[in-house]
Image 1 (cartoon, rainbow, N blue to C red):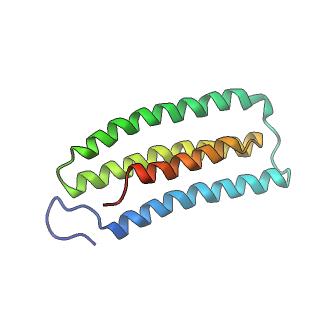
Image 2 (cartoon, rainbow, N blue to C red; image 1 turned 90 degrees about the vertical axis):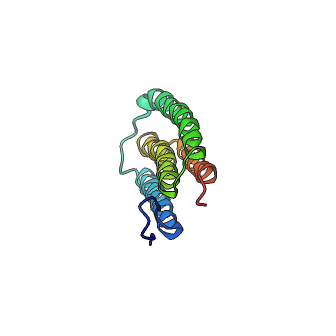
Image 3 (tube, one colour; image 1 turned 180 degrees about the vertical axis):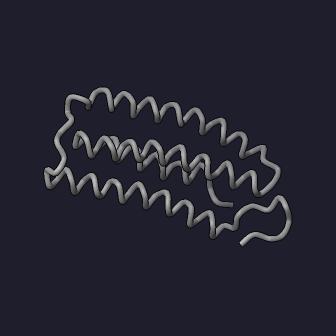
Length: 131
């Protein structure tokens, strides 16, 4: 719940729910990818592994740069609403990388991008804490 002031942001409970939802989406997709790979229900796309790996690390690098910018904007925020908005943007940037890691797991069977993406997302949770 938020109070009645125009610049109040979402409550910490709401922000916790958003963060948990983002993480559960990534973990659910990763679990489905793992299961499908294990059951051999998905045809291997190993020929795409190099291109997907390059795309993954480009996305991580690009989103890391964007996170630095967003983190600076968060530091300069003057209202709880602005802080919450910067937090959500930072978390979503990391979620994109984690989901791409899960897609790579699904298509190629490589766990490393998924593990890195999920760790990157958890690091974003620490970089953009709920105050």
